[in-house]
Image (cartoon, one colour):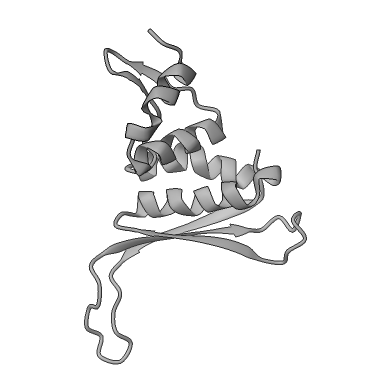
Length: 134
């Protein structure tokens, strides 16, 4: 069987956005890929599971000075109260450390599910603050 790196180099163009995000988040928290015989490798599936997010991603966020908020709700028109969207996941990550020279920093994610919304918000934290999120 090929190494994880060899397999990923060959298959990354065929992976979905969610699979690539799951790999990125797994790498960020230091979780290794696991073998899925005979197809290759897989990573923790954070984009579909708030349980997995809270087990691994939230402690990592906390360790670098961030907190997170997640909600799942429809949007309503403020005047009429009528629904203007289906149920949607929203997440935000807040810098509460003060170590980045900012009083308040946040990244948002919006997706059909709260788990994916949280993963998207965390991805923005990783991408925008690489030097302080390792």
